[in-house]
Length: 232
Image (cartoon, rainbow, N blue to C red):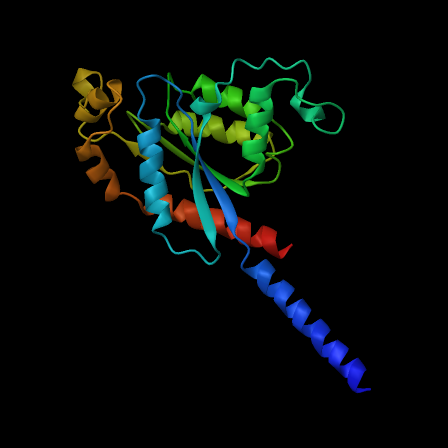
């Protein structure tokens, strides 16, 4: 009788430990740098976003890591198979495709940091998304845009694409625009001039630091989706 009781107690401890491990499991969030241009500020904007989010309180343990599309050297999609049939019916042939797939598969959620080029998302971002399919499905994503007027057209376009790829886009989509733009001078501003040289200037960062409310709200929504997924 004592042996049975001891086994029951041990079983309870194991179940308790498993529940505790599940409750505290680390969630990996990839911060995607969308721009692949030579002169870009996308990496600097993404660092600003990552730094801001890293300081935020979350109810679950998370790790934020940069994903730079540019570092994967993805050509225009060059596989002979459709991403939707990988891996069930076929495999990628090229190493760049395999590396990109393996990287994206690591994460539980994403923060896409997108520029706006000609009222849309960068071509490199769209190409990178289109390379894959199953590793995206069902994962939460926060869209953060930036540009002359905040990149809102790019944000809307990216939302359509990601929802079509069956990701869960959070409702709040923060946008950061260059301050001090002059409508009479083609919306030119010191921040825009700096961006043309690949520099996110200090005055822009200082302005954005006072406008992080939407970013933090969107991040809370992202965490809520992760928590909901954990409870299912």
